[in-house]
Image (cartoon, rainbow, N blue to C red):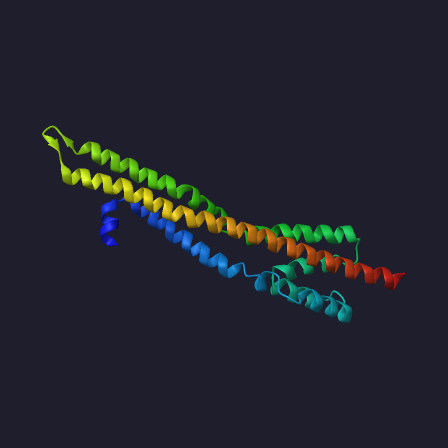
Length: 205
């Protein structure tokens, strides 16, 4: 492996750095975007029963905020439980935008690496071509320098694509995952609004 890196010349280090960052983001997002952590099962039923028992108490709101992103949406809704349904939904949507921003953390960087890695490979290719032309001495071609130039050109192109392809695949995968988690969170938050407001109108009716 080390001989390949040496043969590929200094441009390969930019691609290796990009690959390390890409891997770190992929592992971090795999860990952070687990459904159980973002949209825990049973939280809606738990929140509704707690609300029926003690109302939108400060303790309940505090627990929800610290529980999960879905809990934060529920807390945003319950804070506005005494106003109209529309205001409650707006509060949930506002909090949803903040949560969405956090779920998309690092994805821009991953997308940038996916787009930039082939260009870094191309940079290595160009540097390799310059080496090849540099090997054309007046007395004929220097085979060693020619071979070195070709290896820089080819290895960098290959490494650039090796980093770019998985980065792009995971970028797309995580974006779709974030979208589906947000849809799920929104639908549960709307259910909470309906339950709470249904009970209020029944109670006051």
